[in-house]
Length: 286
Image (cartoon, rainbow, N blue to C red; front, side, top):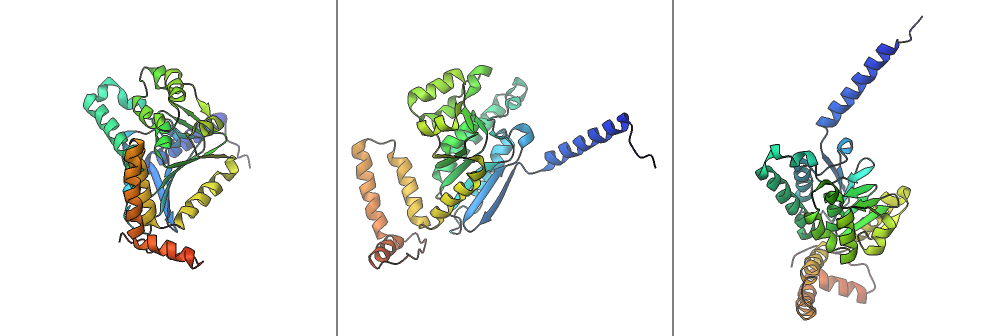
């Protein structure tokens, strides 16, 4: 039987398939998360739009991060992305004059809230980067406590090239890399490689793409073996002391270490060490 389709029919089928795929993508959640054994992995899931941090994407990510964040079963959060781009930053289509100043302010305020949330929640947040991270996407990486990148990843703050200087991404970037490196990235918009990002302190580790998931999970699992309460106290103190003078920082951290010693898990850890056994964490705030 003659069953071959004519070129016009083939084209029609192809167009229809693409429309169905686009429709499915439009209805797919912008972020997805799974949680297992204390590790919550959140995945940016809008690869067709380069995982742009639109207002709805930011809100979805914020919601996934904060979901039952005080549950002691949650120990670490990993942020990853589907597709070849980790995140291209803000969706510039949202910044046209038609949207208006109030909407633009909503986008920036939501973004600032997201970045500060990452550093103020009680559990560590790891960026698992495989691909390009630009502008607010680079800001997201810089805001995470730890960042593991594949060797194919690149990082840039190219807003200057479209007339929108990356001022808010600069806040996180300038706190992660030396001033002159940050300013070169901001003034030129040129990307840096994963290995350059490692050298300058933007990422914690660079691995081959095929090892990215394994290496990220290895670090996450190691964090899961510690006391959530102790890590939460340490994280909060780290970000507080880093902007203080040397004298102020030592005054604060000395008091915090005394507080740490009074915790149930602080004493458990020391007793376990002296008794040469593994500690049994209570994750209690007492």
